[in-house]
Length: 164
Image (cartoon, rainbow, N blue to C red; front, side, top):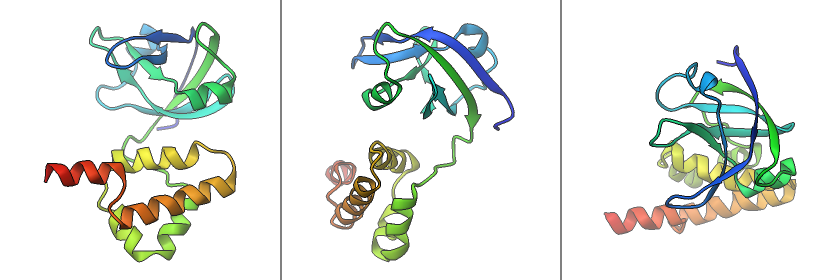
């Protein structure tokens, strides 16, 4: 899937809806070339790496939602022009950070619970771990997730338990 890469320059904008979001709209010429359905990507914003899904608006436009952590890392703010380079990735593949893999390899109970999570939920937990650059903090977060998962104390698990 990494064969074709796309590059464009755009302005970082804020959209208001259910939640306020800082976004980069994809040019229509690129949108026309993208496959239908879920589209995950990897690339850079001004040289700073990202792994993002393409989001959809009801009007048919598509965009990347750029969270505060990525904005800080890329040193950009609303109104800034950014250069985006990306390629498509497998939407079903999740790269688990080595810190979490190490924890799961050493803790069978945590692995069993982790394997019950949907890929989307796992992705959100991976993002929580990888949103810090310090290796010690990443290890701490991986251990925290494992312990809370085993105790059924993660927010996603609590919401599921209330529905059941």
